[in-house]
Image 1 (tube, rainbow, N blue to C red):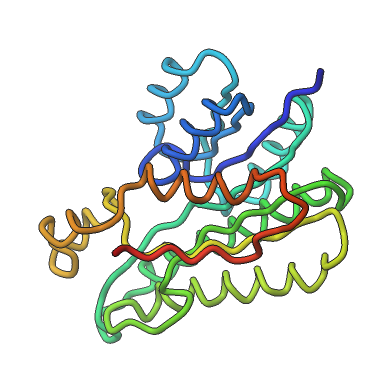
Image 2 (cartoon, rainbow, N blue to C red; image 1 turned 135 degrees about the vertical axis):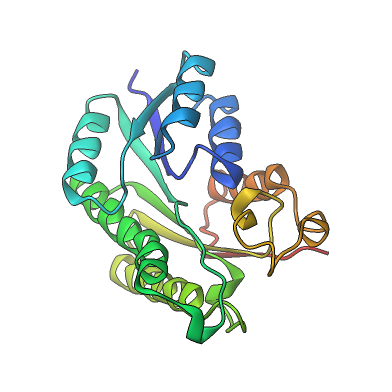
Length: 229
């Protein structure tokens, strides 16, 4: 029997790692894409079955093409989860080009992986789950470039929905608020450890996403907005 494959970008840490763990527990074969070499080596040694890691840059088109070609040989791609991305939390006048480039890698990767997976699946029988942020729903004082990226991801997601409406390709947008991960480790002037401790557990957010994405009901949850209490 062909393996049912879930592709997860940015699955070495945080929410992505929780998604990897929980999908494996549900007997999916998980293909994890991340550039954190050390963490990916640990995961390779941890998950012997139903798992394969691919180390590389999600904004590198050649890497993306090669990765999808390799995954095609492993089984049937059912779900693509575009989760990878990095933040940069600064006031508008503090941004430099490297901050902009870092933020926009997530958008580039989302488009590249979606495009190549759609081609590989011949635009049939696929769920694409784009994990963005509540920053895609509003503007925030110290997140102008980050919000610009997330609004771009939202626009891309909505355009995919319009393109594939009524087909077997389902597009799901996910908009989580603050999650208690190392996402904020380089932004302690903006999100302190005490504030981060009040954020949502990544395991809870992952479970909420998976429950909605993998349900057997004859409907599609188009948008998932997850806010902390």
